[in-house]
Length: 528
Image 1 (cartoon, rainbow, N blue to C red):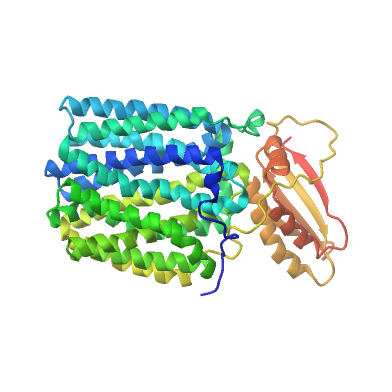
Image 2 (cartoon, helix red, strand yellow):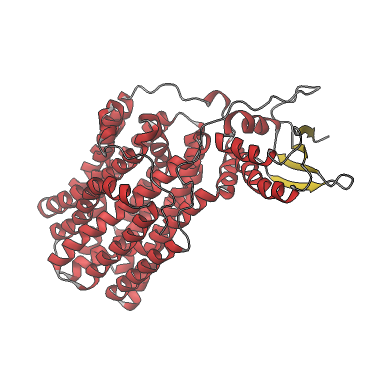
């Protein structure tokens, strides 16, 4: 397998921890995620004790992830349009209120499976609304060469929490009960909010010229729809999440098969977390020797092994092989998260991260529900075996659908050297739509090469704001070509020129201009 989509320069896995702001926020996220995993185990074991079926137990996973399908895109727009620090603080405050309410209801013995799923859904909403902002602030905290390491450490906050939280929750459940577990989760959100208040972040750029919600949402969708590298990352994430969701959704049922109590179930989840933490140490060495595509393929195979173990094997072998599955989980997520952060430009980073969350978490949510139904109809063992088989097919698909060359490596720095149009009047930002026509004097005999190069320019225009694009040839001069594209408003066009076009966009246009005899001529037309 070719070494495409290679990782950025390898640095120490723990280098970002030397930065105080990253370190404090990292521990805040770790504590919050430990509380969240404790709450998840408490919720699932509450349903196990209530003798709920596999479908209902799997719905805990669906309820926590379904908000990603509904709110990820709006959350991405908010994270790009509002002050991310303030957005995160308010999100943590909302989580405190919801988690505290769940604790009170549980203490009063009024908690039912339906109300538990409702509280889980609401906590999923606050998590979804803050997730794009959490991802988007990472490049602000560390230099570019440490983004891969920071992404891996970000995985530790989830998977290290998975190692500690479930085991801790299992012990507390056996000693006290679910209300104490839910209360600890509320306290963890308070600690995260305090860390965000401590963080003295520089003023966020671009807030004085923020886009309106609707146009910003459409701009984010247009970008992802025209970004081939990003679309392939999203495809790989969905292919992995669909079968991988079976293990997460049905692990409580596996604990019942193994006749475990809450502490034993906590150790099963904890084994996945231990493997993920071990992966942090192993990944820098592995990614130095193998391409990201190899890591993604092998990770799918290892996760399949853990899924088979959960279906068939006794407790101790299952525990050991789940460690491998945890390592595979962090391997896939680290590669995909780092590739996404390094590929997305700053102006659309939150919205791009929101689409990634929508695809990954949405696939996990739907998959969890479907795997619960399959387990209810055909048995948990058969459901997990089918999921393992699909994971092997996902690994094989890397040959046909790899991460594309250039992923995480292309120049995404904003280019500020584009010419300012000279107009006979000053348009309002809301004037539009605007038609831009660019005439190219193509060198004789090189029309075909020019047209091929302009296909990449089309993607650039659409990514950065064009709602329509077309290339025309002249009827009078066979060597003259006309590019015409439409942007929704003059303000959108100015953002395209001053905030969105990157070094990579300049390279694509320069490649097309190599086939021209002279400079291109640009004209701007407004709706009359």
